[in-house]
Length: 57
Image (cartoon, rainbow, N blue to C red):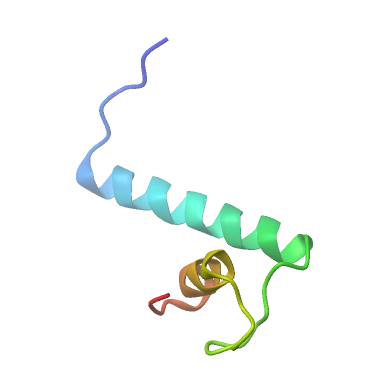
């Protein structure tokens, strides 16, 4: 089944929903260092932190 074409606003909402889901799952698994500049954080942890805290990885 093909997905319907999303409007720009709906696409942004879906992107935000997915980002929130990633952050929630990573948090539940204990994968976030919760510090924007955590020195021991992996690239993935920094990227997920950026999704959760609105910064850049």
